[in-house]
Amino acid sequence: MSLKKASIAVLDMWASNQQTQGPSKHWLYNQLSSQFDVQIVRLPRWSLHDVLLLASTVSYTRYRWGTRFYTAQEKYGRTPRAFIKRTRLFQKALDDLPRNPDVILQIGAMFGPLDVKGVPYLSYHDQTMAMVEAHCTDWLPDNFETIKNDWYRLERDFYNAVTQVVTYSNVTKGSMVNDYGVRPANVSVIPTACKLPFPNSEEALLPRKRQLLFVSTDFKLKGGDLLLEAFPLIKENVPNIELIIAGGKLPPGVVLSDPAIHYVGSLSAQELQRYYLTSELLVHPARYDAFPNVLKEAIACGLPVVASDLCGMPEILDQGKNGILIKNLTSASFAQAVIRLLRDKPHYQQLQQQCLLARDRYQPAIVGQQFITLINSCLGVKC
Image (cartoon, rainbow, N blue to C red; front, side, top):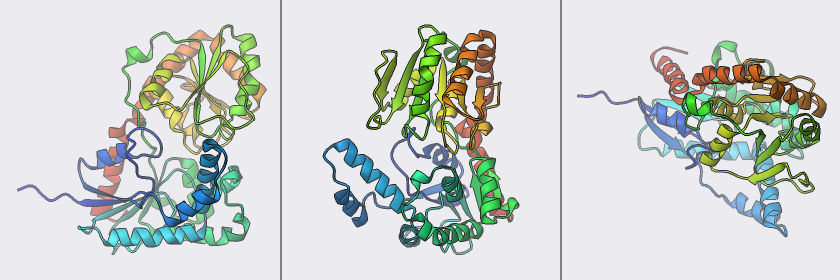
């Protein structure tokens, strides 16, 4: 008779049916399901507060309305009131599960800690609010100065209550330790996996078009305006170069008058991967990006990257080996890095080869096994 699998309750407020895009962690849940009984606990898609926010952000165009609603929803979500409400809702959902879990895995720190009756309690994070406040104040609620002490108390209490905090990067681990007082031994680093299927090496090394690829859902934060400033200099020095911009709608006021710049909008996972396989460089001059999926996806497709030297990006890109990192980021410094690399074909080909050597650490099976090992450790002995 087979032994009963240990049960994991995954608390994921962003859980969706999207398998390969957005915040989906289906890659992780599929791997965990090979050894554990996985129950995903989520909140209702809509609440009364969401409906009221939708009404309060009404605008004359669908795009502007959607942008205002999303921004308001995100900012409200970073308030103590929302934190406490979500904690209450997730506690009820956890208590109503048909089977008491043997392990809790919480995604993010937007609620909690829950009463888990003494079972191992793990959490998984890309960033902390301290990192957001230091680098991306536009994401903060407008009244953050008046609520920050309450928020940080809730966040700090959560991190220090769970059995094991897991972060995507050492940068985020450093914030957990230095900004929140978490013991270093209580923080593990496990990167997120690449959610796109890995092409074979032969396909990844096929000839590519002379085009740059920029992928983002937040144009300014990811340096889209800086890239547009840099592109004329790149174009002047690299004949026939084109720029592909993929992602959400361009912000108001951004006009693409250069015929060599093509905006292709939001793409499916399959369409995006085709651009990864046909472009010559991924360009990512981000002002802030905790641990970008696009960098891992590019590497998996043998696509070298030129990016800013910030946040967790140096942990994905090995300088000069599978990408180029720019310190003291300006449009001129970024343009010069792109130009130098595109003119140096031997170095470019070395970067491609190194991308394919580096990509395995982002295989879902490899990352998932790290989680399985950590969870088994927590079940067998104290972490």
